[in-house]
Amino acid sequence: MEGALGARSILAANRERSLNPTNTFRCHLYAWQLLVCTITLQFRVSSFHLPRILFGLKTFAKWFLLKMVADIGSGSGDTRRASSLGDGGALISVKSGTRSSVRNFRQATSLPRIYRCASTDGLADFDACRIIPLDRESPEYVLLHRAGLILDLRSPAERDEAKATIWMRGAPGGRLVVKDIVSIPGEKYIDNRMLISDDGKRTVLRINVLSRTRLLEYLTINWLTSSQQTLIDHCPSASREKLRMDVLNRRGLPGLYEAIIKTSGRELCFALKSLTEYFEGSGMKPDAAAVAHCVQGKDRTGIVIMLCQSLIGLSDEDIILDYSLSSDAKLVKRTGSAAADMIGRGSRVRPGQFDWNVFSGAPREVMEATLKMVRTDFGSISPGYLDAIGFDSHWRRRFLNSVVRSTEHDNLACSRL
Image 1 (cartoon, rainbow, N blue to C red):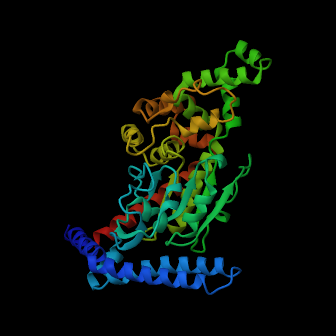
Image 2 (cartoon, rainbow, N blue to C red; image 1 turned 30 degrees about the vertical axis):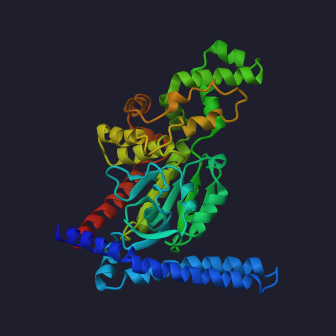
Image 3 (cartoon, rainbow, N blue to C red; image 1 turned 60 degrees about the horizontal axis):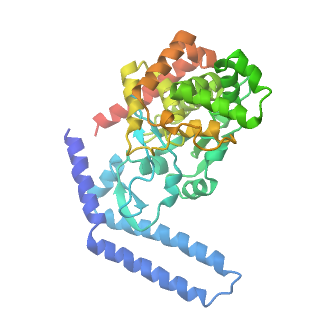
């Protein structure tokens, strides 16, 4: 208790020092000096070398400002101790007056080292307009500093490569290596150890758990009547897509989750194996963390987190409560489901035939229906469904050992502070 109070007081003092008007003035002064140097050089160098020089100066200016304020804010031993505790010791640049750059970010219930969130593209909007200390549990700190494994569950069409390059290249916590999992072999899985870097580099695994082709095929086979299946083979493309969208609207989010669970088992298994091997190799590090995200952080991310929570024996009520937190309007954009959008994206049907209201939010009854569906069709989540997708008892033991071990290590470290 005393350690926690001490860390808070140290953090408060750190904030006062780093945001002191005198220190802010000094930072602005250095920034203006760098700007003058840049303008002067524009008139003294040839146009051939100018772009390279300006890029180098811009990079140096950002680094210099960060280092300057870090030096100012760490003028005493107390501040250095706060940094070692991890409570806001890192200094990072954010735009003044803006909300968090990552929506729907939170620690997954009962999984202290695993976080969930919406798209991370907002990190590209970071700027050196203002430099403040961040708490180690904030989305910016976790993603830019702590996360050694990031599971990007989006499809290629949903990613903004330009923004991804910006924030990953400038992440102060270490280089991020991006690896695309284009296809998962049917009989033999790729060795995860070849994908998760063991040389200190952090890894972003892109796993597309939402295949439009597979989902529409599942919809056609399982949700259409025999007469509709006959009709769909002979009707025009627009009519075919309209029929599929009407069926999907009637099924709603429970149907969408059912289709993902039953058509993307290999990808979901790969995500679980990646988490397992990451925590086996890096889980004992004090700040090791993993993040799973999609576009809104509620559908595909919700399924992966649900499987992890079921593995550790979390109750249905707690799983449902964690999922339903994504209904908060402050956390997600009220624009329906990004996963459902991917199914209808290739459709030529005019807007209005896809009911966005059906796929909005994260109602608790949706996860209730999903858990019930898995148990009805597979007997249980663990071992039933997990055995079916290839995450057998051997992998489940490894997952439990690595996650529980890292959690206990975390608790032990906190108790010694």
